[in-house]
Image 1: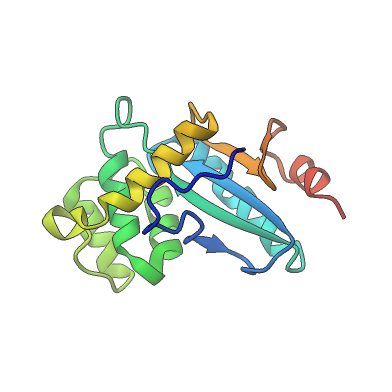
Image 2: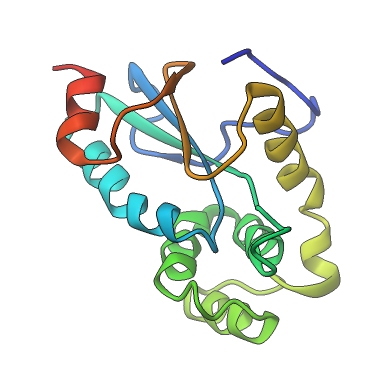
Length: 168
């Protein structure tokens, strides 16, 4: 994966699950309406949680808005959640069949966040767009797409395969 800084004002590694300084980095380009991303989410978290601080997961938005009509608004809502990103991340996947603005507001309220839809959420569009553009440059065409330490991961999205790929 080429190192890309599409917008210097946007940190592409802003959503890190796990130890920020972990020696192994797994980058996921994901879409909150994608059923495959939903299935991968608990596996990726279990990988990080069981790594003893060796693996970190970086989430980047890649909403497939032409096939998932609520993916972009869900990405904006998650982005607007700020330091509660991972809480909203989990809620969005848990309720991926209900992602209207009204639903997003309910999930955000339960996470203690406001301003995740409409005009307030539009302030986060540059971050979502930067993630998306970086994905395009890296060759992402579907979700979930994973990169392991900068290289495309083509293995199975199963815990055993991922553990083998990240090493001991």
